[in-house]
Image (tube, rainbow, N blue to C red; front, side, top):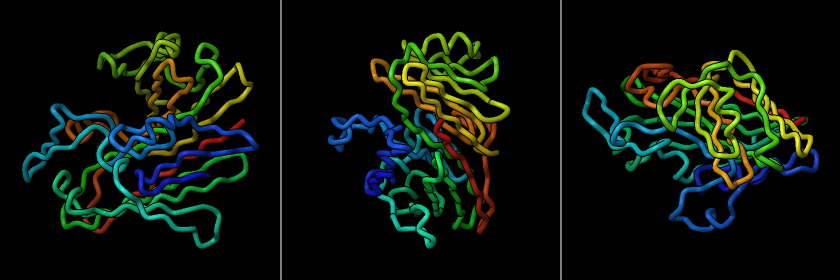
Length: 259
């Protein structure tokens, strides 16, 4: 693993069995004023965006930009006690409280295990109020040819984020090389198969982080296969919105298995 904690706790490289699986745009990464394209960005306390970037709460309205702030902040990094991986930690600050009025702690344990990468996240509510949130990961996986990629395990219908309308998943998969952005609600694991290289990757994600977003950005030869807890605007619509009582915590687990 290669991790840059000061840039959003970003995992920038994952080499498994001698092969680098992650995509990273080095030029954009070198420019601190541009959003990162690559690695495994962390999405918190929302996934996607909100209308007008406004989060309405009982105590007022707050400005919260797309995917939240976790991917833009420095995280703490330390080895796990058993040295099986690392722990990344993020706590609330005065800046986060201005956008999201809750005291929190996120602990993300990242473990490279046999043929796989496991990410176990615990979200703690350290505030005195019920804390609503969504959490997701936005990993970029490099592929040899977008025209020779297919995905398995997705349901027949999806939500096309580009039009915010229901769509046929098969039609979206036909457009990977043209650019897609859609959310699905699979019943189990999802597999990304790169026929040109002969490689495959299986996403296993447990409830409540069991939604899957697929995103491509041609001409970049990569596919984002993202586990989310809730869809866009979940904190407004209530669809898959997670809430933590004061002092409580929520555990979220996913793993990527390389084949």
